[in-house]
Length: 262
Image 1 (cartoon, helix red, strand yellow):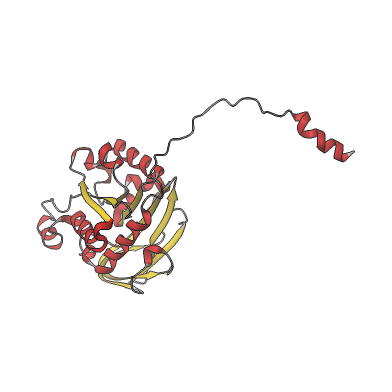
Image 2 (cartoon, rainbow, N blue to C red):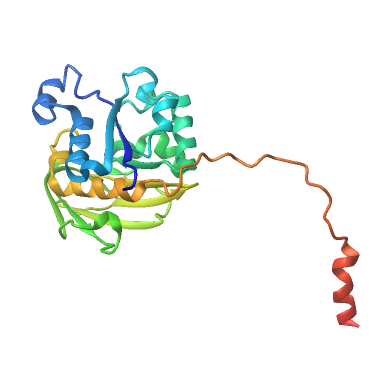
């Protein structure tokens, strides 16, 4: 039997603990959004995974060297505290992704430091919070992330994300969302960065119970399995060196050409 996929579910845990949102969040997500995501992974993947959670308010945001070294796939949910994430932690996560750790960037994590670092663009988009219906269309039926989900996934209430979404062209487009206002959005995209796999998936605003939705949970479970490292390694950039002179001289290279020309 293969070793379990070691998953760390990271969340801001701000809305859950804030004076403004805490009471409603306690009803919608009594164990926090990170808790709901973790529960869905455990229920769907069982012994295939070992799941733990980490939050912004913990020392090192719960992402110590030890935790990161023992994480195969990291899920990241952020919203309004992106600026509070320590740059040193972001650098460590970035290094781990380049070395093979998978990353699932969820909903407003499009503006997280780690996602913007990996993408190299502003990652801005259009949005509207008016309780839209979102249809998540599977545009890559053979992709491992899209297996076992209906066509389309129907989310009755959700924040609208719309184009233009300022991201690099995805390596793979897995989902495309449409909204009751007529907007479209590239809601499920993958990239390779170094040895690591990155999946962005947009459904999951804090004001709606999206992470209890069985089809959204299936997508996240599929994505965890897809994003697990193909090999366990850390990326070490090649050193900048002063190379030795070439083994062959110009005359040796040009000799045969000169002979052929004559």
